[in-house]
Image 1: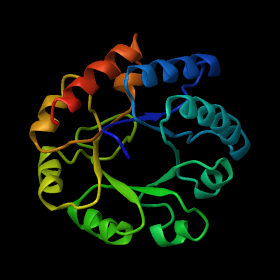
Image 2 (image 1 turned 45 degrees about the vertical axis):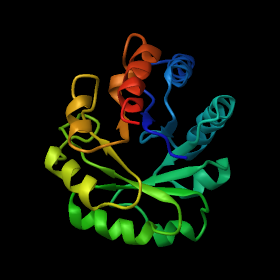
Image 3 (image 1 turned 60 degrees about the horizontal axis):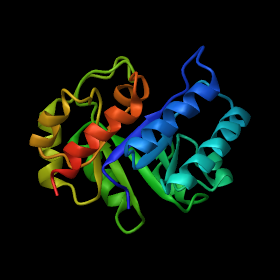
Image 4 (image 1 turned 180 degrees about the horizontal axis):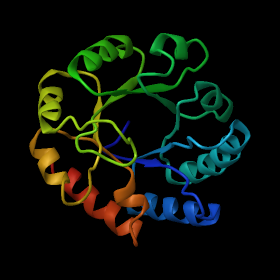
Length: 208
């Protein structure tokens, strides 16, 4: 199961690896149900070293691990999934050497429908956003809540709203029809990641 609360974790420059792992463990304690390693600035060997640590952490909590951009590294790590942007390999190409879930970023309905067709029957999800502008995706215009409303009406595959979602914006995203959200800074950079994760989980669980 994909769960409802998805944390995308990016190593921060100048932040020790032990601090990152501590924050991630706290977030998992708080109720994060899916964890992605997004390490744009690291070379393959460093991603593998960090990925091995995260795989062990995720195993302790029974949480799936997803690797960003790199199906090859996801296969080596025996991760549960890989997340691909629009400029990365296609779903069909990635499936040639990775058998796990495939997540796909989408920014407009046409992309979402195309990725839905590619994913159906094979296991995976799409992300919908960025709902609000975010420094995680500099230069990417916000899609707004209209795209979330469209996704709630039209998508059959699992999907996550993403982009600028925190405790303050979460209620509006849920009101627009989202039932799963992906979060980056709101949890990872919080003074107490476990508390923020727990509060966001309560919001999401209240939809059941």
